[in-house]
Image 1 (cartoon, rainbow, N blue to C red):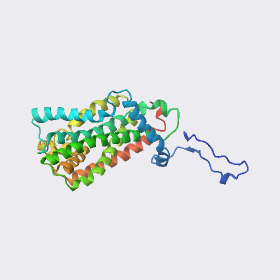
Image 2: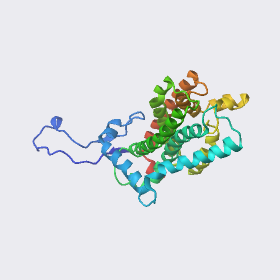
Image 3: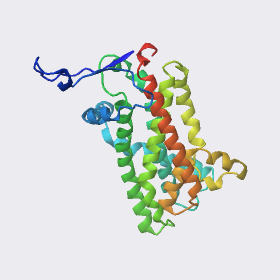
Image 4: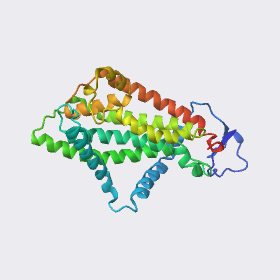
Length: 298
């Protein structure tokens, strides 16, 4: 098979020597597995911004509350978790205010979960577009990650407001220098969600059942992640198993930086970093392999 990129061709005089002709479009044989065409992604950055805008407009256009859903969802979930798990269930929050503890876990988890779940169906959801026009396929999952990052940014402002309220109220929270890792934490969560989603969407071109498994499995994964409980409160026998989840180190570090509760384990953070990078690179390679001929199987 050969890859054909469609675009306008420069006006070239007929008498121009072949070795001096410059073309906007070239027909080339399939490249190797590790040629990710990242330059093409940069050239199509305007399309990325348009897709991000489309996601917001299409999702909130016919809703009553519009962008207020950014705040409504985490607020209601935080209230529910505080009542059920903290008040009724007696779950520990490591001495942190329960609403602040749960909100920090919820917004971080939602970012990863949305990136993962929406990226995992990108081939199936956009098969009609992919089969008609050429553009770097990686643009589509990247637009999902950027859209969710904007959503996370809005919800993070809500977290900061509540954080400042408890801080001025004199609550037992102690932000520390680990806060400087916050941008790295969000980058790693984006890479982990994107890479995991790319692997699943590549596999669903042949195995459709995986789409249903993701919907079910991501709900279970939340309970294996320290969202509603701190890792320190897990039974000793299961703590090591839970720490194998790369999200555990990221969310625990996120909480420790802002709330100062629990413990920061450098080994756990480095483990999460390595796993996130490996999953992301592996996802890119698999996605690059499948996107060349997925239309024949999807």
